[in-house]
Length: 454
Ligand code: GLN
Image (tube, rainbow, N blue to C red; front, side):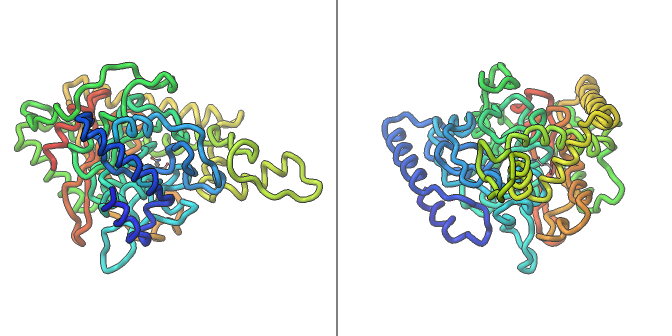
């Protein structure tokens, strides 16, 4: 813990930590020492973690990287952080992210972007988003692991951009209670770690049934670490042809075929599969996610939490809402609230929102069919490119940024587990990752297959 705190002090330029909690860390570390001495040391005991700013942490600022939550210190602990701390983990501080987890580059944060520790010619690259601070902190050895959340790729894309491992569990595996909501039917928290084994250990400590989240699954939790046998003989790995898109760089193609060969050499059977509705996933996601966000973000009204605008003489409650929300939300969040409100409005609900929900069902059925045909896991690239430069995409058309999520959003729409594993480098030496998608509730198998890609 002390080594991490020292590393964090020297790494302000990365912008990974937005709030440091050294007193809490040292007290938790001392308590962990005592547990270890007493012979009562669970797997996470004494492990120093960074916590994404989306998690409510009791008495510690939790702002979702938004101005509108300025000064908000929750009275409660999220289920996930509570479970991690009960398992002996140590909190070093809160990590940077895109505002309300909306983004793919950490550039929508009120704190400014987090920076990728990987560089090309001293150019500042994005660690990805929205869990950019988490990825940057783990990759730069500022913590041993971090929490992330993934609504459309926010664990897997930053993991791929920084050469670490990140798992989005099956929807319902990890409690959402106490995590600031973005799109509630898509959001899942998961571990961001240095390797697959750490991912298994941390998932174990984070997951399980929680009566306070009505979508939390009451299912047995297997021993994820014990599942890492490395034996994948006879497993069937699907290669979906629709993920081979026009304009995919040759180095991503090569990464994918190299990963396929690794699994084949380990005894897996490789089959070509079709997920025919893939091309509709991004448009459906960018209707459903903003729709849910516009509803979730209605609670930030200047009354209950955080920021409230200064009012002029004669301003009433409507002006208070308008001014507070105009000042409190950044441009990307405002765009999502407007898109979401539009697609849910009476005249457009059927044309956009209902249609997107139907597309979502078709996407889920594509996966169901593949799994019913005997596929155990699906291998795809995690991202269409390596990390890009800060400012490179944010200044362009927002659609260009949304295209980053092309390989990841299907997994959230279908509620499946997905893991990104670093398996190669691009021509400039930057990390590249592959994604494995598993059957629902089969994280143990997914982790074991991912283990063979390391
Ligand atoms: N980049 C996607 C978005 O902006 C996904 C974000 C996420 O997974 N939280 O919505």
